[in-house]
Length: 140
Image 1: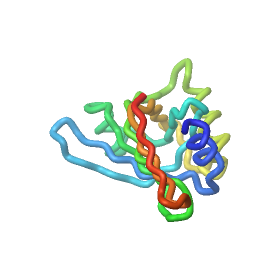
Image 2: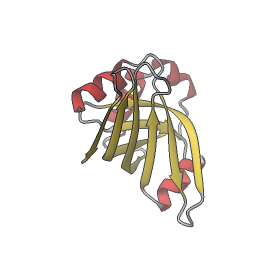
Image 3: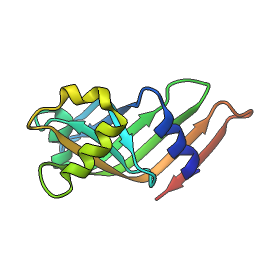
Image 4: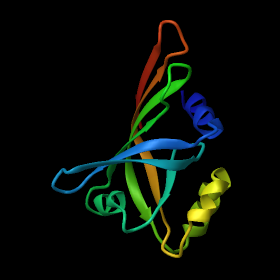
């Protein structure tokens, strides 16, 4: 499953997903964001500290992502634990990974750009191209 998911996410033409977060008082928030993926299925997002998702993740590290929005490929529900990456030792690695997979997003980078590293804790993959549709769940 891991290779199938990695290849799907890495090779998507538009690397977009929906991120859902919740504040400490459980107020939800969702947004469409660009992503980059590592071979261990760690996902990296780029954003700014003034966004609702950043503020929510400072209070509550749990996050949900959704990838895929059609019946021809995979649809992935992804739960994970986030880590906020600001300037520091690993910042350049995340910058290189994210903009390497999303070069068109570089124009949105500002001095306060940060990254969200998300490590998977649970995943449900539905493959609607299989008949019958194949559903696989995995905890990490």
